Figure 1 (cartoon, rainbow, N blue to C red):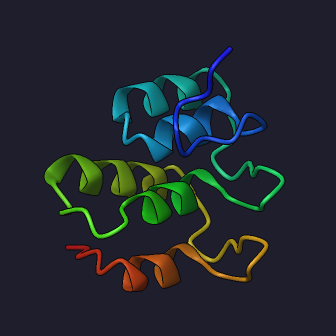
Figure 2 (spheres, helix red, strand yellow):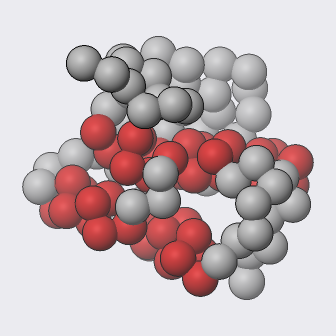
Length: 99
């Protein structure tokens, strides 16, 4: 089984969907019982995954909707990965414009 580039084989479906910016899939997984603050072995949560995956890409309305959806569903903006960084730190590093 091949793993899409950038996804860890030990990453959850929710984190993978968030990293790929798939709002509909994220919504389905959360409605199906996935935990919004689950993390992979690197400490990455779905919210962190979105912010890390941007890598300087333009922030479109879909990304903003995904970020807002995660936050509206109690995603912890203060969760830290193994490096001690939060979603806000990655957002600033990648120059994400949150409106």
